Image 1 (cartoon, rainbow, N blue to C red):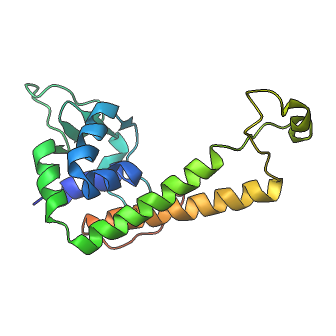
Image 2 (cartoon, rainbow, N blue to C red):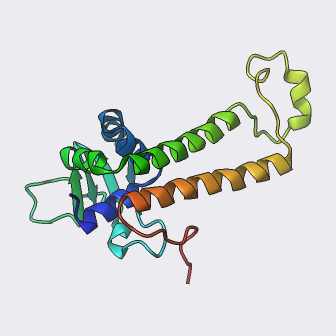
Image 3 (cartoon, rainbow, N blue to C red):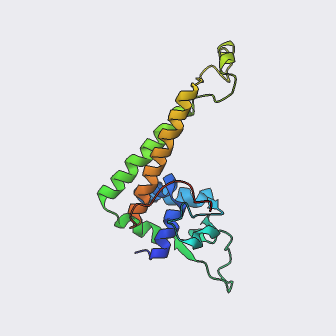
Length: 183
């Protein structure tokens, strides 16, 4: 079982990568480690612990905070660290229902991204008709401003839902989503 700090670290990485690790550890964990994902601030909202402000780093068989901590022989100690084997055991300990919810939220996130990958966000939508014979533009579509606005709202909702499920899988109550307070 992961400690509370380790679970916060996992939530600090968050998103589809953690959902991938928790739903399919045999594929997700190696993919996360190979990605060398890192962030200079893993504190997604004010509800997350302050120590996550020192960032997170994935790779070398572990997830660690602070993001710049590298040397296990150093006298410095990380705030939290999760090794691949610990993450795998944790993922396998989750209920089938939790994994199914994460998997569906991950699929919704992927569907939204794939659908919009065929759109062109250039400011010259009116010119795209002339470029329909171009191999670069012929398979693209130019959404209206309202479609773009709707997409961003839907994408944010899907991502927030996924992160809430990651938090629940880490054993935390859902927290407020959105931007950190500025003052």
